Image 1 (cartoon, rainbow, N blue to C red):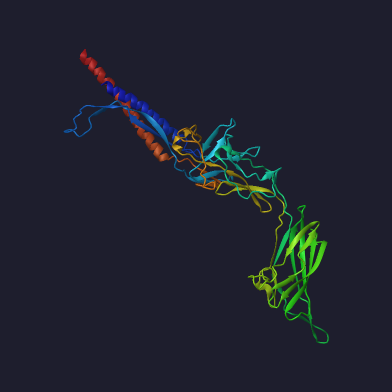
Image 2: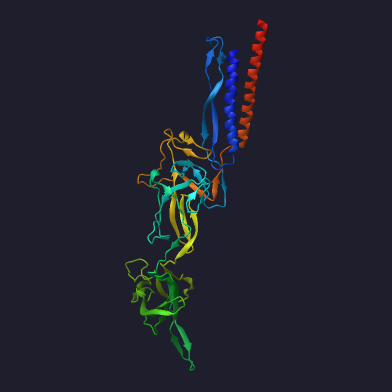
Length: 444
């Protein structure tokens, strides 16, 4: 009879624990990055009423109820929803964001709800700083001229707070080279005089492109070409004038030369290869000189053609880049945060660290969304290939958040079941009490 009391009491304590766990899951169903906690139970111990199983295959054990065993977390990924915040992040796959609080204590989370604080650091709603590897591309609020175009994670212990300045400038890159491509029409043009005689007049062509000066201002290069007439049968020569213009199209400097083409239209001679831009020479590439032993030589820049040149692409490219102001920040799937400038340039600033553990089930849950590593989980680590480069086992989506993986249907069902079990245990105590009272009364 005493056993029934033990069973009832242990059952109430156990089921109350389960009710608390599932109630907590329901309370966290709308928390970003929260994980489902599952309560586990075990038997206290059982004694056999009948040790003979030969003629009685059914169980004859008598137990003393159940007790709290442990809890475990379900780490399956929650659904991902879109947001309007560029710093909201969702991990697609295995991995954890690393955070550090104001005391320097490190923690890990799947809740990617981040924003910039007053100092430009990426923090979560509780002020914990997001960790990552800096690209080291900023100096005095300006992008370094030879900036790193790629950034990789260093080691788990050397990750630092991610800071994104509000004001950044991309410095100008002065133009140092201009490439010209296209066809020059050498089809003769005739003009009829008053006497009816036809006279060939020179063909003319022009190329214009903007350039970037060393001070960041905009200028122009204008190339005027005039075909020399009459021409020899096996060649064509163009008088070439290259002019350097300021922003208002005023001529600052000019240079003259010639471009010669053979009977097939290939470039065979160019005696104008650069022009000075206030102490900074600009290389002028009109194409390679024809060499019968080299494919496409003489035709990879300017070439002459007797006919309609509209069928050939004509373009001028220059390697200068205007200065640019910070427009916005963006992020790719590998967690690299880029600064995007008004001149169209994108420069890596930092890479968000994604941590891994040998045994994530061993993590200690300090809150619904924060976890700490333990001896059971092992130290946080990054996966690296043989060359020491980070292996991306998960991707990161910006403008997105991972919702809690808690199923409201499952949680409510478990809550109802545990509540019924709790009521049954409580009833068993009442029944046992009545049985004891009856026994006492019979004794009297």
